[in-house]
Image (cartoon, rainbow, N blue to C red; front, side, top):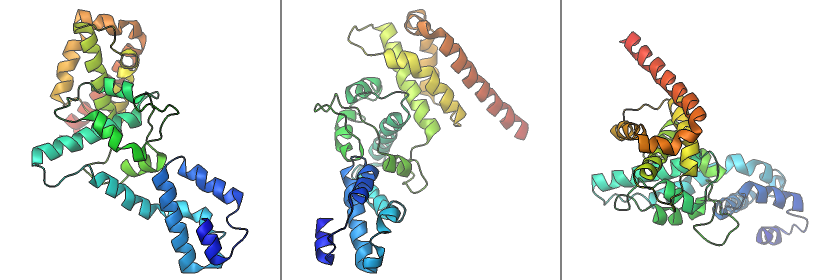
Amino acid sequence: MKEIAVKEDWDDWPTLDQLDKLSRKADGLFHYATTALQWIEQQIHNIGTPYREKVFDEFAQSGIGQLEDLYKLILGAFDDPKQNTDTRKEQQLGFQHVVGTTLVLEKPLTIHQIIALLGDITRDDFDVIKFLRRLRSVLIPGTTASFKEATPQIHKSFRDYIMGVHAPAEFRILTGHAHMVTARSCMEVIVKAGIKPDPKQQDAYSVKHWCQHLRKAVEEGATLEDKGMQKVFEQMAEDRVVNVWKGNLGQVVFNVAAAGWGLLKVRTKHETES
């Protein structure tokens, strides 16, 4: 910004208020700030002095195209056209699972806790830790210096992009699907805790929120056609597994009943239409 002001001989520009507006909009995301600054400089270069006061108010809307280009570039790093079709598909599904879960979490979790939650993703299929490290540019880091103890949260600009129509279809996050895969991950954690208890296992989030994710998945149009979901539901009914989640019985009954009712309405509608 200083370079622009010196070049244009503007001693009073930008103001502290304008810098604060840019800082709050960037919200800690370096790439967002960089893109915004590039856009501001380009607009001033194209239009000149009359535009210097308006540019801060308009960069968020007008500069979004460049942000989309930036995010497409970031996504491109996760998509290698040289990979065989199956491997490429696994990487895309892994992206949707990890990012989708991070987007729909009912409460913030540290990276360490997210990795534990996503234990149903085998490292041979998708390296969650490596992926999260590569995605740091669109995560808002926690206050701790430790990577695994940081609390990630998808930056709002990236959230809007990756859940919107401009994101590539193979990476776009659908809310219903995100809740469904998160519900499945939670249930896998619970099943594991029931079948093979481990004092070090972190299952508090899963026990409390699996049924909420299930209900919200159905509300957003997801179904239970996934064979993996059908299997894990059967395991959830085993006595030793029930003992893990029965302390949250009230919430389970409410949310599962709501999900079941939603699925019944969808099925009835389809039968009526056919």
